[in-house]
Every structure is written in structure tokens, then in C-alpha cells.
Length: 394
Ligand SMILES: [Mg+2]
Image (cartoon, rainbow, N blue to C red; front, side, top):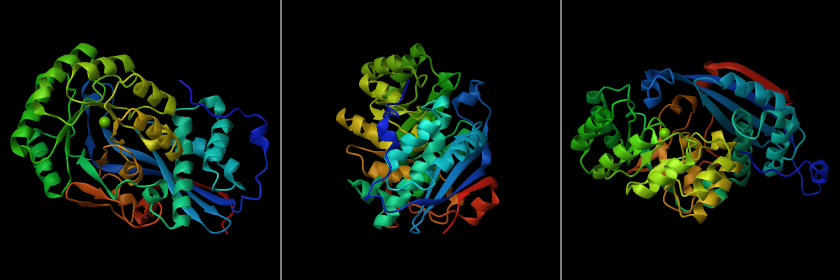
């Protein structure tokens, strides 16, 4: 599938006009390997497709303009891909030097054309995402506004749910403890991983959680794409009695037709979209009524510019939204979305930043800090395995 971008015709060569008043002067790229406290497994590991996750590779882009404005953005990769993201970002980064940092859409097109040979989705655009997020961060900071406010916020807080406590590598006794801790921390929902080769094992785990949690917080489940169509239908029916907020990724991420059929057949809402890496792929899900909750991931789809296009399309179909991972970015985007939203609480990235998000009464609060509202910690610096500077600091 492709992403529509303007042709590299006469428009692409136009020099900036009088309205362009600032220039990108310096970029720093950092590849940070963030270790997890313990290896974690979802259904993809139990079906033998992946190894347990031990670290997350983070690509950070810091951008400074001639006028001294500063932005920071990131993209990421789980398991393979981090070094590739860094290499691609470094190769295309000189295209930004001397450009007006305000022209984010034009710069996204310029970067995607620079790497057009390796495509308009996947790793190529995930590398661009780090720049795109940094430019949005800079724009909001220049305006003195949290990003949510720059975009036009609809709320100052978003309901949040916990994912990090519910992995399949967690024994059921610990899982139940994690659920209690999450509720005590004020997190508004709990997501439990399912999709084991034996669906009965999933139902037993979920039953244990429901018994302890009762109706205190809403529950979701996530099968991480590991059911086939008949299994999803059968387990989906068995799950109806749990009154779940959604069933996430019941099928292969690209099985649009299968998701559409399941969404039509089940009362429980269907959620998917985290694995998709372009607007066009999300468009296919949305157009085919394949999901009730759309789950875009800004770093994966190429950044905030692309995420906003997905949000606009999803809004027209009255979809609910639950962006995937990266709550530091998605809190702002969920706060600006038209319909019902959830943001996914992961504490994994906490050590990378000096600032932390506040949670109250089940909701994550948009802070009054300008931009995304984060600065890199000393720990982030210590975990940096490669870095590159392009251009000159003021
Ligand atoms: Mg998921």
C-alpha cells in the first residue's frame, strides 16, 4: 500500500518565500537502547514467532533553529530495526538543514522523497517520525503551548489503561497483584494479554482477574494477532460475557476482511492498527469498517503529521481511538481527538525523561509544559549507543 504525497514536480523546487523566517541549524540524532526490568512475552512469543522482549531501541532527534528554538522527537523499534532507523535518519537528515522548521508538511514530503527508493511506510517513515515529532514539539514550544493545545484540545486529560502489568510472561498470581497496584495508582483500565495456543488458558487468566478486580475498572484484552479467523470468532464469543472495552488485534494486522467480519459478528468492540505503518494502511481498516477502536501509533506511521490525517479520517467514521504505546506523544494527540479516547499507560520510557506524566482518577493529565513537555535524562545519555550531529549549533 502507498501513501499519497505530492509529486516531485515544479512545486518541490520552489524557494521559501518571505513568510519563512527561521531555519533549521542543527540536528542531533541519538540511538538509545532502553533495557526492560524483566524480559516480557506476549502471544507472539508463546506461538514461537518472536523472542521475549528485553529492550526497546529509541531513535531521538533533537533539532535547533537559527533563532534558538528547540524540539525533541522520537521513534522506536522493538526487537530488530533500531540500528536501521538510526542509519536512515542520519542519511536523510542533511535535507533539513537550512529549511524553515515551521513547514512540517513540506519537510515530511522532502524527507520521504529523499528515501523514496526504500518506500513510503515501514522503517523509512518511522525514521522520519523522529524529525516530524521534534518539529511539532518545536512549533508548540515556540507558541508556548502544550502540543494538545496547539492542535486544538478537546480535553485536558484522557482516560488511561495499564498494559505493562498484563503480559503473558507474568504468572497469574503476579498478574493479579499488578492489577491491584495499577488500580491503586489511579490508572483507569486494565489490559490483559491473551492469544495463547490454548484459549482456555486465556479464559482462566481473565477469569482470575475479573474475580479480583470486579467492576472497579474496565478491562480489555490483546491477542497480538495470534488467532486465526475461526479461533477469533469462537474465543470472541466466549469473551462476550466479560463485558470488555475491546478485543485488540484478534487477527493478523493486515487481515482487513477478517477484522470487518468479526466486528460485525461480535458485540464486544474490535481494536487494531498498532502494527500499521502508513496512513493508507489505516485507511483500509477504516474504510472497511474493520475496527471500532482505531489504534494508530505516531512513531510507526511517520509522525504526528501522518497521525493527524488518520485521526481526521477516523473521526468521519465516528471511531473511538486508543493510540498504541508512546503515551508521551499520544496523550496530546488523544486529547485533541473528536470522539472517545484512551491512552495506553506504559512506564517503560520513564527513565529516559526528567519529567513524568501525572495520573488522577483514572485519567492522564496534559501538563502545562510547552511542546510534548519532556527533556532527556542523564540516564538516557548513559544508555546512548550511537549519536550523530548534523549542522552547527548557534
Ligand atoms: Mg497491542
